[in-house]
Image 1 (cartoon, rainbow, N blue to C red):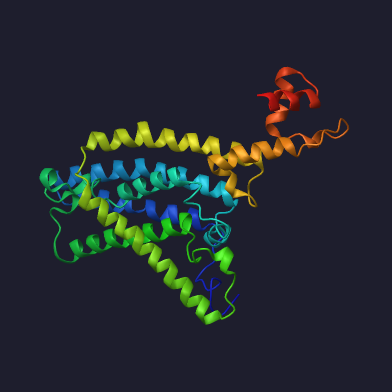
Image 2 (cartoon, rainbow, N blue to C red):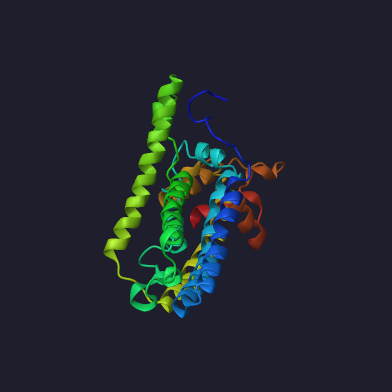
Length: 299
């Protein structure tokens, strides 16, 4: 391990994402107990809202994380960052990034999804009857959660500590300079995501609670499930991971499909010359290899 630089970590945990999900889910217990112990209808309703909201959007976050795990075949955060050296995941997975960002807004109880402490309905939600040190700890925990989720978002989709165009610049020989630049880069990306939280809070009005849950169960979850099925199909069809991730762009898909057809050299004795779309057409129409290739070229 290097003295300074990307290898400088407190714990290079192989199950980093699983650990983050497990820790973030513990917030539900504190909020539910805080609302129940306050002996107030506003606090109790706020805690129930927050619990349902956290559990619902935890599914969205974990499902979006599955797509990132498919790209890297690892739960290690360091491996996920290094896998983004050719290209950051925000570019090929921009819709997944938007879904994940919306999920983090609900998970951190930020506007326009701060229904657990809606001032116009529940005074201050589950914190209504709490004051002094207890209120301060809840308040600090909320903003610490924002920083944590912003850092996690930058690690998963913005390359973490990797510099922009890192693959073109190449590694920096100076270990101390590399460590400083890596830390500054991760901090800047985290601040950008935090700015996104603030911008959304100032730009959009609070939605109703039924709308919040409807968006989760009828829009976001079906979308992320569709991506869970779509992304592996693209990965298998074009063998894009880990060397050629650019095929996930729509122009790249078309170009790769044409290149695959042009580069095929039919060999009746070797069935490995066919790739997935050709095999599917061959089986469906019961054709030989050369006839299948000619049919797809005509299409």
